[in-house]
Length: 278
Image (cartoon, rainbow, N blue to C red; front, side, top):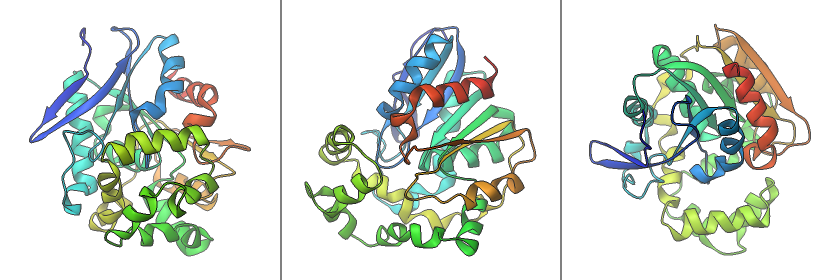
């Protein structure tokens, strides 16, 4: 691909992409989590670009202004995976290295498990393999940590709580480690821009794709977990090797919160580059 990709279309949807780095660089696709957008990768992509990698940070379904369906059924994992595959097709001819954080990691696990021929390597950040995450709920405090996922199933209430300035939603995000600057970005990119309902759609559809929990990953994989993550306990990391049949490495970032791309961009870029082999 010798021209930049700022947008691509898939069916009725138009997706935004932040495409940076050398035009002939090895392609790396990055998937953000909730409640952030592609800009959350800026500190990481800058460093990857310096190492000769070309990065494609995708504003996923629900976040790109041209791809915000209203139905929760539109946010099933199968649809989210198909969006990533459409971007890989647009980059062409593949395969690519894939990186995901939070919900982006959940999607990335599913892409790598179902389409290993399209993926050279996987770096999953914060969120364990979906199957390991589910099992961790049965053998640790993970279920208690995930109470907000049930809250997010309610209609209207999460939108109200998260939209209020200095309200309960912002307190939840601050408690998870978001800085004042990150909260400001959240208010601008998610609340003011109308992306909140789409982001919540991921949670509201999470029980609609049970098959995503069991598929194993065969591509070379690094899982990055931080020991001060307020939402994700270590048990998921301990169980993840059961779901990876290819080369696998766990990296634990001590002292980091859930927001690893924002807090530790240099360290995360090094982990990604190590997995890619540059």
